[in-house]
Length: 246
Image (cartoon, rainbow, N blue to C red):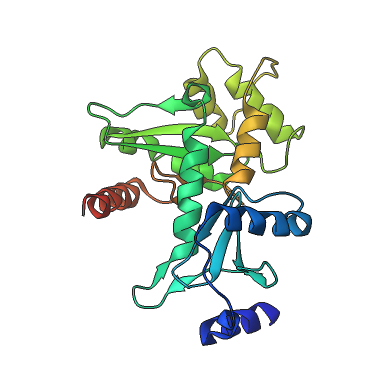
């Protein structure tokens, strides 16, 4: 109710009363300092929005909209009513792309595209997730259509859980692709220990907004939650390419 009231006030323009624009870095820095005690640290960035006097403060995937003086702020999605574009999700997508680009792809379990690689799809997965197993059955079809699937570990029960150990077993296997496929078929692998990225993958997933598995992230940072058949995924990826070319 409170959030709806804030959004209503924002839409009516009441947040804009008496607010001037800020153009220089000094004002942005000052605004960040005002937010520091409220959010336990400086925002990663502060960006102008299309609404004069309202700024977007970025804390990972969390976006806060704030007035120039730092007095008024709210969370929620900013929508461009003329285009129906979710400006907040656009910002999250960009931040997610940056986080994923910094990931070491050599630490993923990768199923390579056949022939020309047209797309790379990152998938946060859990061996105890039935829809993850269902998606794995689509991987061969994705590979045939030029999509590389690279798996990241996301044990939903958390670090140190039984599913966490199962994910470690996959990453410690000599043949990781075979171990992934056998695990997806319900086979329990022999417990192993080695240097592995499972905990860091889990932390990355939390940072980029993963709340369940499978969670698919495209190269442009778009998060696709849940199972999708191969044909639908290829259409989505091709459509995204078409929009990017325009």
